[in-house]
Image 1 (cartoon, rainbow, N blue to C red):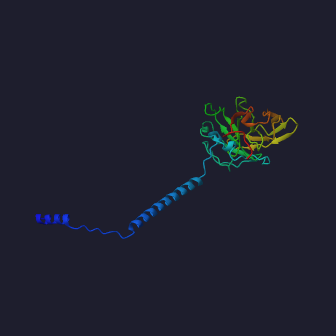
Image 2 (cartoon, one colour):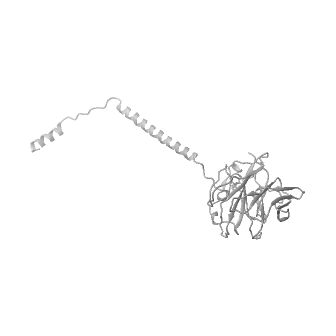
Image 3 (cartoon, rainbow, N blue to C red):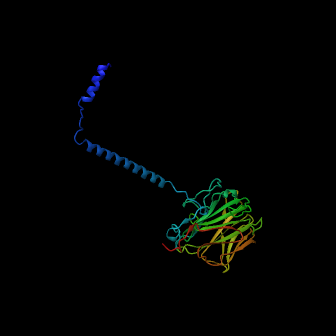
Length: 312
């Protein structure tokens, strides 16, 4: 471009008219409506995504942690979903076999027998905790588990001398607590053929006091009897444990505190060993009672109470 052309171009830009084409009438309003519509649609999509995400989270089963791992506040001062029923079931049955051995912590849902197998217990567990019997007492679920242990003297759990042990836990998630017991303890000999422990809990007014005894025997014992001081005698069922656990297990639930003994007999009916009923009065409140020469631990109630439990 030469100088003359450049001067003509500059003059036209400075003095030429500027033409502005107006937008059709209503364009601004339509743009605003379209912007609002887009915003609302975007927010709706976000809301749907959030709802779907919440739904997916709700659909995934929550991990249930054993009683020994957590304590949860109780709504309105009572156990969550109280199970107790004055006319509730009282039963016991052998538990289904649980394949495999997993000594790590694992949760238990309410449709499965509860076992208090918590994080860290693999330091003394030689087998996992296998439920051998399940049932109800006044409508409250309970489970009896068998397991084998190695010696342990750390500070995270009660000391174990090694050998066969068991747990009796009360509640569909063990929330009422329970007891642990072993053949080999400081109060039993290394070759003891019989061990037992007692459990008492008076937390649930609907169910009333829960009084239970549980134990285990070696193959030297052919039968076990509950002999009350009033003269009544009941043979207790012996539950088989999985291979690798060389013991059989028993349980007994009483309606009220009673005096008497649990006696282990050989094939000839001769007394091999025995233990006295040690719950001497009906338990009351949320403090668990544990006793017996085979006792290794008493698990506390897994729910903190804001007050005495009341009927719903």
